[in-house]
Amino acid sequence: MIRVLGLAVAALLLATVPSVVAQDSMVGVDLNSPKMTMAEMSRDDVAALVAKGAPVNLAGKRLSGLDLSGLDLTGANFRGAYLNKTSFSNCKLDKAILDQAWGLSASFEGASLRGASLVASQMRGANFKGADLSGARITADLTNSNFAAARFNGADLSADMKNQSMGLMRAVLRSARLEGADFSDANLSRTMLEFAVMKDANLSGANLFGAELGGANLTGARLAGADFDQADVTSAILQKLKDLDQARNFDKVRNLKRAFRD
Image (cartoon, rainbow, N blue to C red; front, side, top):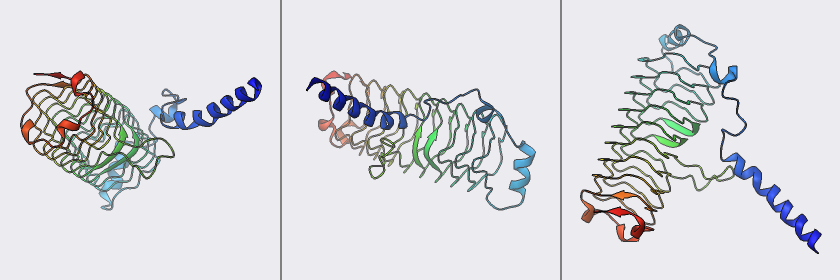
């Protein structure tokens, strides 16, 4: 009986391990490999494609480390591309496709990504300071990224509840810098925001249903019309909040007694 039970437990563990591993695309990746660090094209090569006038297709290309700053890459396809430490500073990337792209420590500072798609992308440590991601669809891993003064107006960072075979697909902004970021009317349902610095962020009209805000710093954040239903605020800093009386379902947050309040 014990042996049968042991085999059953082992089978259960084997069945669950792949799904857990699949949620973290960093597992087993050699970050120092040529595929992750070298470029197969130059800036001039990319600029020549842009000069042809049509949206460029760079899907799967190795472009790590390039300086592509200032280019008009509207509608460009970077699906599955390698963009680690690539500079897109002040680029125009409206409606660009960055799904499943690798952009570790890439720079999008001051870039326009209005309506862009960042689905299942790996962009830990990226710099989006002052970037415009209004209307973008984002389910990327953006842990430790910088979004200070970035705009997410009407953006969708919510969990994809229809596609969970590879784990919960959602925006992960754990320990991200979000000071002064504008999330007005954004969908942050079930978004991971643990330990994010959200001082003076604008959350007016945002949907924060089930968002994970444990340890996040929301000092001075604007909350008019924001929906906090079932959001977890364990150890969150909720001080000097603005328009709290106009927030929705704040009485339904989880672990409010464990938050730091005025």
